[in-house]
Image (cartoon, rainbow, N blue to C red; front, top):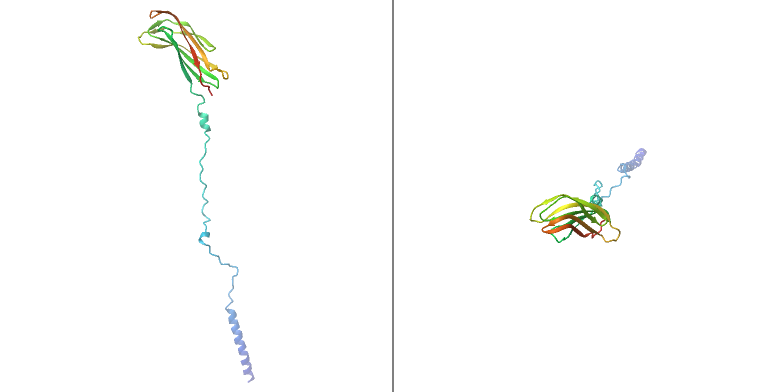
Length: 206
């Protein structure tokens, strides 16, 4: 009798203990508190970090034009002119001249003296005279044999020299030339024919 009573008292305790053990068994799985769920990004927050950074726009390369300036011609166009004379006969002298700038005030000047005539036969001459500014020379002309009713120009001599103008001085050179005929031409006695004028350099070089 006493034994049955003890069993009845202990049995509820075992049942209670079993219930407690079952309740604890439901939460026996370990909980990972270190893992933090990721917050999803909004579409405008997503960026492609693998995309290449765009290169800056190519700028045009500026050129200084120095090479062109170095290879461009330094000199200017030569200055040209003509001087003519009237001897009062059918023989006369004329001159073509060309002045090439060498530096700011210096020029290389070439003059060509011509005889203007119709038909003419004359031997060699060696006593011609030519002066341009302070530059003076004598010249020799070859024998001339020309027969035609048309007037022609025959070169007598060519002369080249350099001249430097000083500062603001007038850029003009007086010219004189003479040629010895020493005979009668078209019924008119002709000894010497001459030419006079100026070579005018109207603009400076440089």
